[in-house]
Length: 550
Image 1 (spheres, one colour):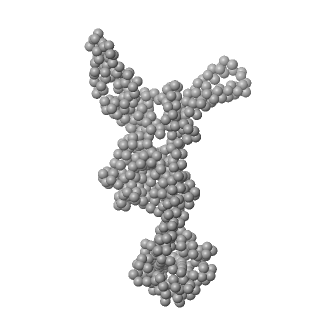
Image 2 (tube, helix red, strand yellow):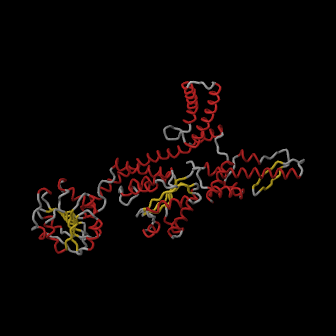
Image 3 (cartoon, one colour):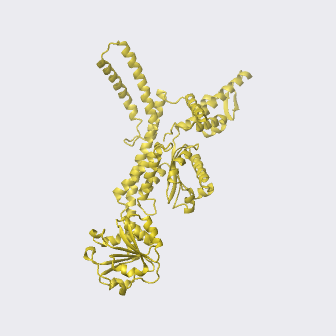
C-alpha cells in the first residue's frame, strides 16, 4: 500500500544522506531501470570503450580516440554526477513509492511462557507512549499495541519488513530486559494478508484458549478507543482494528460461536440451568461446596448467568471473603463445612468441588432431606465436578434427587466443542470475505494521492481559463450567466476526469487488478507531471529537520 509522505525529517535525512554518501551500496540495493542505465552507460561499438569506476559505480563510457585528457575528466565528472543523481532519486523513490507492509510481531499463550509475557506486557495507560516510541523508529510509520494476559502483539506499518521487524524486536528487548535472541525464539511474525487474517481471527475468538470467548473483542475495541488521537495510530492500523471489530461482531452474530459451555465449570452451571424450569432460574437456591479454583469458577459462571445470591460452604472463610470482594453486588453467604447437610436441606441445586478423597454425600445423607418445591422442578440436583467424586453414585437411587458427575459434563463439553469447531469453519469463511474487503480498501489508498493531484491540476486549469474568459466578457456579466459558465466548466472537467478516475479505482467493485490500477496511476503521473519534484522534497525534509532541532 502507499507509504505516507509524512515521514519524520530525521528519517528522510538519514535515508538521503546514506544514499548519497555510498552510491555503490545504493546501486546494489536499488537497481536502475534500463533507460536510466543507458543515460550514463552507452558504449559505442565503433570506438574504443573505456571502463571506469566512479565513486564505486562501474560505468562504461564511450570514448573517442580524439578526446583529450581534459575532455575525459569532464566526461567522468558529468557521468559521476549523473550516477549520483540517479541513485539519490532511486533511494528517495523507494520510500515514497514502495508499498509499505502491515506486520505483526507477537508472543502469545501458544508460543511463549507466562513469565516472558509478563515482562513484555504493556499496561493500557502506557499504550500511547509505546506507539510514540515505536513510530520514532526509522522504518516504522504506524503502530498499535494489543497487550492482554494471553498475548502481547505489536502491529506496525513498516517501510521495510526486515528492518522494521529488527527495530521493533530490539525495542521490545530494551523495554522488557529480555534478550533479543530469547524473544526471537518465542515470537511469531505475520505480514500483510496473514497479519490481517490473524487480527480478524483474534477478534472473532478463534485464537483464544476457549474458542469463541467474548472478552478479546472488548480488548480489541479498547485498542481503538485508546488509540484515538494518538499520533502514530494512523489510517492503516486504525482501519485494521476497526475492521477487526466488525469481523468479531459479525462472526458472533452469524455463527453464535460463543454459545455452549466448553469448560467443566461452565458446563456444570449450564446443565443445572437446563434441568431447572426457566421461570425458576432467578429464584432457585444455589449451594456451592468448596471455594477452591473450580468452586470459584462455578460461582463466576452462576453470576454470569444472573444469579445474585448463593451459599458457599468451605473449611475456612478466607477464600470465600476474597471471592465476595471480587464479586461485588452478589450476596455470597459463607457457612462452615459442619453446616453442609443443613445447607443442603435448604438448597435446590448443590455443586460440589472439594479435594475430599471420600464422598461427602451418600444415600443415607440425602434420603432424609426435605423435598424440593415443584416450582423448581421437584428434584434436588447434585452436580459433582470433583475427582475423586464428592457424591456417591448411590445418591441417584434417591427418589427426589438427580446426580450428574464429571463424565456427564464431559459429554456436554465435547458436544459444545465440536459445535464450536463447526462454527469456527463458518467463521473462517466470513474472515476470508472481510479480509478481501479490507485489502481492497488498502489498495484503494494507493491511488488517493494521484487522484487528489489530478483533480487539483484540472481545477487550476479550469479556474485560470474561467477567469480569462470572464474578464473578456466584461464586468457587467449577470450573476446568472457567470454561474452558468462556471457550472459548464466544472461539468466539462468532471466528465473529462470521469474516465481516468474510474481507472484509478481499486475497491473490488470491478475485475481490474491492483497492478493494472497502479500502471494507470503511474501513466497519469507521467502524462500530467504529477510526480513530486525531488528538490522540493529535499526542501521539505530540511525544513522538518530544522524545525525538530529548534
